[in-house]
Length: 181
Image (cartoon, rainbow, N blue to C red; front, side):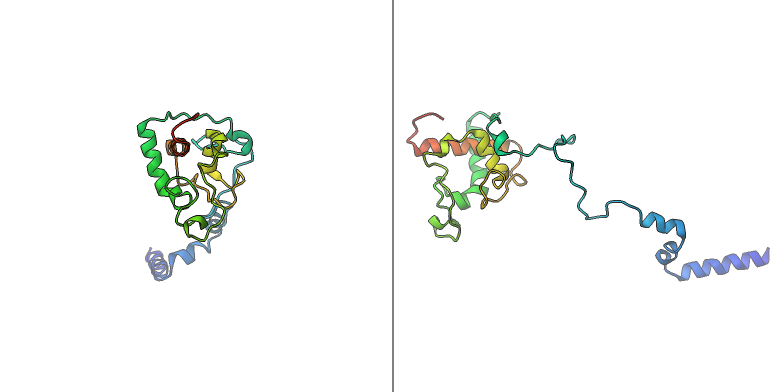
């Protein structure tokens, strides 16, 4: 019993004196656990298969083909317009300007470096459906507007539709408050 106790004590001293991580990874079955096939921390997970339906509340991508079928669930109330104005001032005003004329501070028309910022209130824009404007907010590059950044990851939920409603009010004001909404 004395020899066993001494051997156990020596092993305990040896294990305590070394780095445990180095010892653990030299044991065969620990190393297989370490080098298994899995997603490492901070690694990008595998993208979902094309056409799958999210089950965690995600949304399907909007395209030119599907945008016009989107119906605006938000009515143009004062609450929606006020929220849309705030979101517009936060994300859109810098390029499109205060009145939506494409003359924001970073647009070429407003003295900035970026050319080609379109007016949201020109006569062709009211012809766009609410769904098309929504899709431009979510992912403009997919909708054919290559210079406009993607705002789908910044503007969420009903705020997107509130911006659509606010842009419609800018269009209405540009026409002198007359015509179809």
